[in-house]
Length: 247
Image (cartoon, rainbow, N blue to C red; front, side):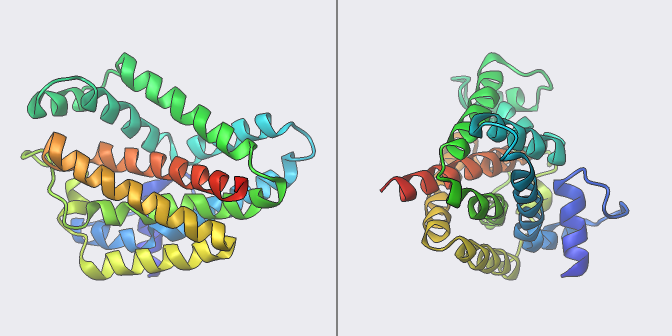
C-alpha cells in the first residue's frame, strides 16, 4: 500500500512530500486504492488550517480560504475537469463533437461558469455548517470524493478510442482496488458519525448517476469526467452534511 499511496499522492496533489517517479499504467491503476488516504491527508491539513483561521475570519471568508487551499494543493487538477466536462456536456452537440470540445484547451462560458458555481457552492456549504460539524466534515468530505473515483472508473468504458490519461484508470482498475477504496472510504466516513455515513451514500448515489449519464452522453468516461466526479462528489458530500444537520 505504501507505493500505491505515494503514486496516488503525487498524481492527485502538487505537494512536494515525495520524490516523483515513473509509474506504469497497471501501477497507476492500482494506486486508486489509496485515493481515499490522499483525501484524508488533505482533509487533516484543511482541518488544522480551520483551527488556525476560525478565530481570525468570518465563516464565509474561512470557507473561501479552504477552497483556495484545496485548489492550490491539487494544482486545480479537478476544477479543470469541471470546466471541460461542462463545456462538452452542455454543448448540445453529439458525442464526437462533445469530446472534441472537452479536449480543447480553451475554456468556454459554460465551463467558466461551472467552476465559479462549484467554488461558490463549496464555500456556502462549508460556511453554513454548525461549528461542531466543521472539523469532522473537513476530514471526511475530501476522502469521500476521492474514494468514489475508483467506483467511477471500475468497469467503465473509456470514451475516446485514441486513449488518454483516463484510460490508465478504466483499463487497470480491478475489483480488489475498488473494494479497498470503498471500504477505506466508508470506514473513514464513520469518523464523522452518522453524518459521514449519510454523506458517503448520498455522494455514492450521485456518482452512480454521473457514471450512467457519462456513458449515455459520451459513450464512457474520460480524465476530465473523473475530475468532475471528484469536485461534485465533494459538493454532494458537503450538501448531504448540511441536510443531515439541518434536520
